[in-house]
Amino acid sequence: MIDTKEQVARHLSTLIGLDVSGVAHAADMLTLQFGPLREVRTGRGTTKHLGDWALHIQCNWRIEQVNAIVASYSDFAASEESTRITTQRIRDLLVTQGPTAVLDIEAGEKGNAVVSLATGMRLVILADAIPDDEDWRLFPSNPDAKHFVIEGGKVDPWSL
Image (cartoon, rainbow, N blue to C red):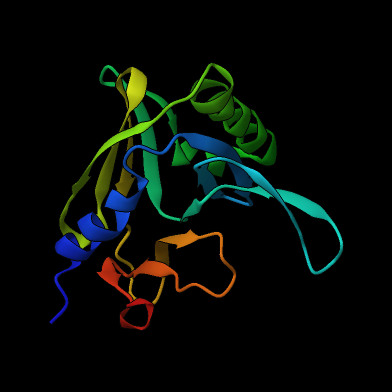
């Protein structure tokens, strides 16, 4: 049997010491890059900037600073304009205002996690635990690498 809490801690611990280097979104999914950015050509011939690791969050999340919520999934769910503004606010907080390193990881039950960041901020991931619905994924920028996926509040066994 897979110990979800242990697997979340093990996989997310790879982020400790890395800076948040990119913040974006795809519809209502928050996407974060960690580690130095480098240019990569896509199959379509465009250029994008990728860090060493990417975290894509499709479940409930929030960014806290000194126990105040500074951004959350509900900001993304409000409207396309709200999503754009929230993405920029998060980018300003975590990237533009200087490097924001991952200090620690705390894994919770059912795929939940807390990523402690420099400057007193925390990314809190609250998996929805809806069966067959992806909550979040972590993966290296290598296109051939496996993705670690939390789906329905559990580790997707195909991601191990």
